Image (cartoon, rainbow, N blue to C red; front, top):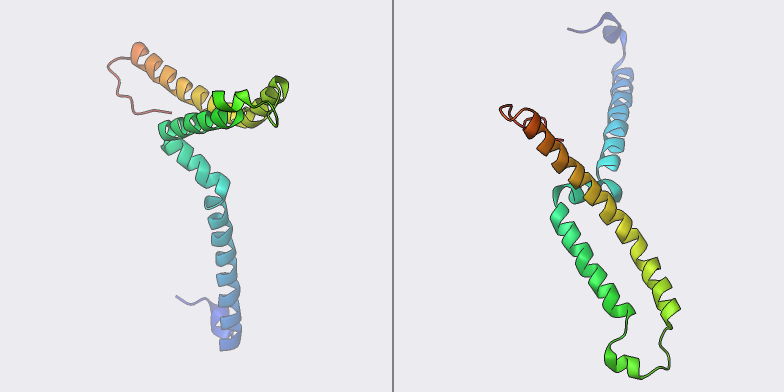
Length: 133
């Protein structure tokens, strides 16, 4: 069904109106795609989906940082060019503070989810666990 106003539009006006509608739709979809494919959104979804893998990778990265920050026993024999204890501790804290914050947040979310599931089972053991957080 054509609207009475559409019948009065020339083909050029109709094409321009369709173009404006298409531009508006494209802008909406482009902004949605930009939000969905931003690095922050991708990493957030990945951490939520593969939590154990991220925790394991963080632990391995932490061990690699420890290995890099603290010299081996052979390197400890050569005191020239090495960091002092205070410098090493400061560097260690600087490198690991963001990782510890991420790990703490992930562990708290995971622990809260487990605790809520446990409480739901204890409160109503016959009810299905369909409202998982």
